[in-house]
Image (tube, rainbow, N blue to C red):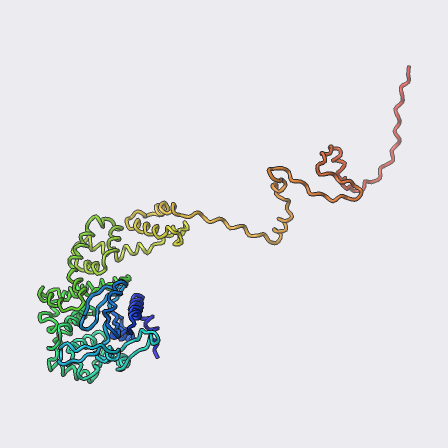
Length: 517
């Protein structure tokens, strides 16, 4: 059995993991069972990128709205009838949180009758087996996969299979969705599903599609990796005229779209988290009339998507003005400005700007200036013992980077001059290692240093009391110094080798006394 808890931890991004934990905790606080469902489970198992998270709760999902907003989530759209909401969770994680429900269609294309239901009821109402799976996030069953229609087997077989024979009849938008999945996943329609697909297309079931479904399918095109290829397939199948009668592949600004997707990938590689779909939709509909665009925007469920799409031009003009003015007069100022700008605005401006100076600053922001930042920490910082452990290090590294950008730290001399005031004092020298062998014995036998001969305040140290030989009188400590003769006598005579016997000499004559006259 697959370990789906481990799969979540390894396949979801850190932001998505935090989003799952947030919704899970809020649902528990409301005593509602919550499940990760639909496309998130499909992509988790199949290995495809997990673009967004779909949650299903057994209860009214709208009860979570206030707590989600307190946690930093942005509400992007609400469907009161379905008790569902589109939410941008912290970390720019797109998600839909919906009530578990059952659906019953009286007429094709008409809104179904909705009733609150269990998670199995919710899976039964879905479109394809690969989307009819759920993963429990509840205590006691967390990580349990619910797959009543064997969707895992169809993922392994790379098949798209409807849940029942009336799937296309009840919800015609599933015809468009199946085409989208065949392009994205390179899956094939299962044999019975293909037969039902052909019959539904011949019977013009698509004419009964609802406006809500049209708006949802228009928006989903912008999230595809190759939206132009999908648009051309829709045009071939006849679905594009359903989404908008005047839309065609010729209305797309293909050159700008290709440039946008290239810059998007570059920004993703640099670690950006951004939603490029509004900008993609801007170029997909670039040559459509304003009325057609406005009609498409009215049908889209995510109102924040529409608002971002509408503001792209204005936001880009504002950023152009700031980048061309004094606010970005130096490279360091331009870096600060672009670091705080919305990634979506930078992406769109890089694709559309005709200002060469602005384009060069954006290009440097992505390449040249980042290469300068990669030079930190400078070798001179290690040389001066300026390490990340110092409290001043973050501010110092930032200042050094800005000076590098502005060309004020070009030589080693300039770098050292800037860094030396922040260098900590050098560490004390380690003590010398103890001497061993003959050196240690020689040190022990060496006479005491001159300081040891003196006591406190320079006074001569008192000599140790010498042992007194028996029969000799000890000299008192404070006895007056002996005369030189006595000192000489006190010293023991040096031993000499025995001298040879002396030759006998004649006795000396005593001097004659003078006679008295």
